[in-house]
Amino acid sequence: MKRPASDPTVALADALRPGQSVELLKELHILTREGRLNQDSRRKLKQVQHLVQFIEREMREGFAPEAPITLADHGAGKSYLGFMLYDLLLAQRPGHVYGIETRAELVERSRQLACRLGFARMSFLNLSVAEATDAAQLPPRIDIVTALHACDTATDDAIDFGLRKQAASMVLVPCCQAEV
Image 1: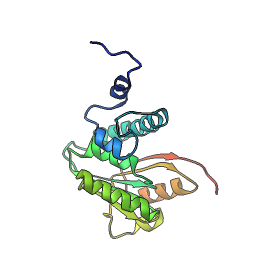
Image 2: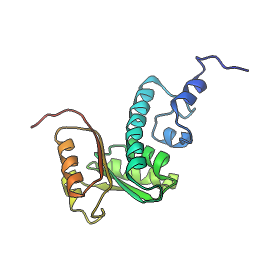
Image 3: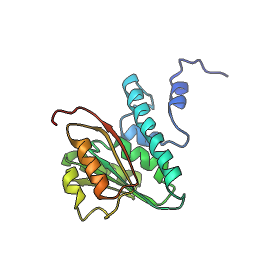
Image 4: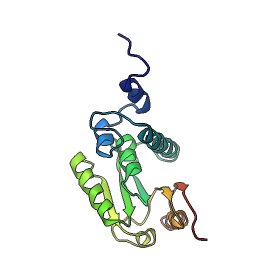
């Protein structure tokens, strides 16, 4: 029996990538507890998935499939991007995702979620981008640097971090620029 196009499960199936964790999306509040996707969440999901595609291409073209990849997500916030990168790209290959965020409560919430989901190769650090450059909790080299909606001078800081950490790729989406 064919479902009508207005059926929310049809829309959800079209919005998700193959193998994408519905449970993760519920935990991130992108999906409702019932597994539905509202319009605002659909926009956020599409935006993050679009960035994931860029990073996926960088990984495919710049790294051997078995090579471990270190990825730092600056200004991680609630870590939508980091969690989705882990779920879609790094869960089945060696590597580590570092979420860097200045708000301690978001860092702690992300740590708890990673633990609950069994995402063992994710770390969340309560640091500024500048502090992260020399932080002992991070490796001397990071392969990929990301920042989604990096406000004010955070994009500049992420670029500086990537250069100092000799990143092979930087995938950055700036936001507002309140200062120069």
